Length: 84
Image 1 (tube, rainbow, N blue to C red):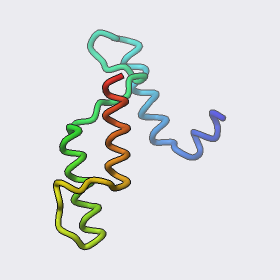
Image 2: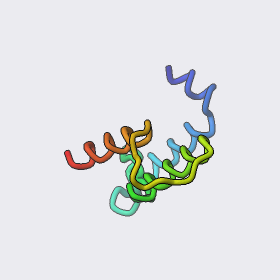
Image 3: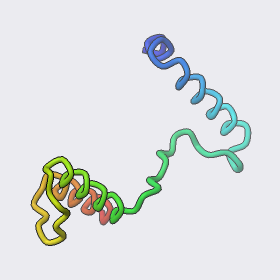
């Protein structure tokens, strides 16, 4: 499996190895390579972007009241996950 990763994604593997080595040397001042990065956008920003993209794809104006789309269900799931 390791060889497969080196063949498929050599740049990513090297970057992760460098990140791991730095973290292993000084855990206090280097980010953990095991921690997922946090989203820089708020849930409200993501909601608005999805709504605009969806309405653009459908050729409609953004309607704040009507929200029974696939993206609304996705966002509901994200909100539920955030509260748990």
